[in-house]
Length: 184
Ligand code: IMP
Image (cartoon, rainbow, N blue to C red; front, side, top):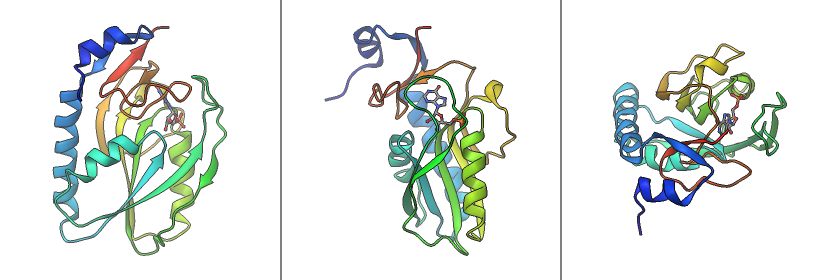
């Protein structure tokens, strides 16, 4: 069963509005997949998905790649239920893949302050990958406190708390097919 964006918006009164509709997300993810496929050609990158927020993005992105690639998962915690960054990043689950000499693409849902991704890239670089790039669905640039080089960006968004397409508020709303802004 599929739900219409507008129908779902009515069902969830916590939502103020839809920021990026499901068809726009699908179109952009396809473009990112094409771009990555072109850039990597015959190389076989390892897509490192940062749980939990990027699981839906990864699932769609991987099906838009026309090149061989592998996937692996890492889990880190930086938010404890609310909407504020604690600045504390803890590795909850590490990779199974040995990334030494591999081309790594870190797949993130959203770059907010940049603290999480900075910490992660620094950590992964100690394992001597051949290359490492970041692919983020959302870039909340106005919230940035740490400079981050993001090779592939889905959408730049304003400094609002968003949910849906993998992003949660207190573990809820990840299943929504669009990116929505919560009521303040
Ligand atoms: P950063 O360390 O501040 O860049 O935060 C990155 C992480 O915070 C993301 O991977 C998300 O899990 C979470 N996050 C940041 N902004 C939002 C948001 O607007 N909605 C839901 N989660 C968010």
